[in-house]
Image (cartoon, rainbow, N blue to C red; front, side):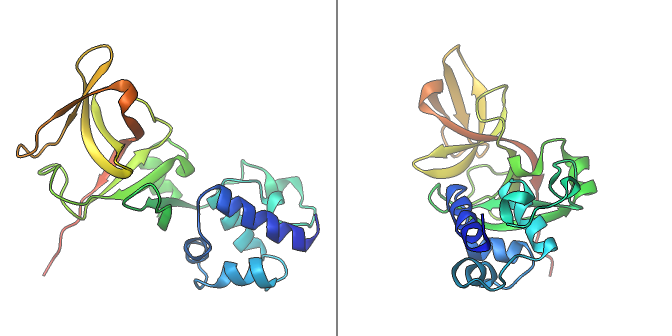
Length: 211
C-alpha cells in the first residue's frame, strides 16, 4: 500500500476498534488534532517512528500495518515491548467508546497483573451503589479476557447499555446474584444468559480529595 492507502487503512482500523482520533492523538502525546490532520490531510505524510510505535500498541496491530515503508522484523516484532502500559478508559455507556487513556510504567503494571495491557480497561465509578468498597470517583481496572462468570467476585457488567460494577455470586447452575455492597440497594437474581459480563475487576484505584 502507498502512503495514501495506509492513511485510509489507519482510519478504518480506528473505526473498527471503536476508538477516536482525538483520544488517540492525546494518548501518543500529541495535540488533539494531530491524527485528524494526518488521516484527512496527509500531514505529516508518514507517522514518525515513535508515534507509529505508540499507535500500533494502542490499536493492538503490527507496526508494519501503519506504514508503507518495509520495516525490519525487529520493528514489527510483537516481542518488542513498550516501556509504558496505555490503558483505555471506558465511557459511562457502551456507545461512548474510549474516552481517554491512563498510562503506567510497564514495570508497575506488571506488578499489578500479568494480563496484557490491551485487555485491561478502566472504568470510573459513578454513584453510591458499591459503598463502602467503591465510592463515586474511584476507578477500577477490569480484565476483559474474563468476559464470562468464572468465580464469585467483582465484575464490570452491562445493564441497560451502561457499564456498572456489581459483586456477582453464583446461586445455582444457571442463576447469578448481582449484589450492591451498599445495603440500601436490593440484590437481583438473573439468569446467566441474561447478563453481559464485560470483565472481572483486578485492581481498584481509590481517590481521596486532600485539602
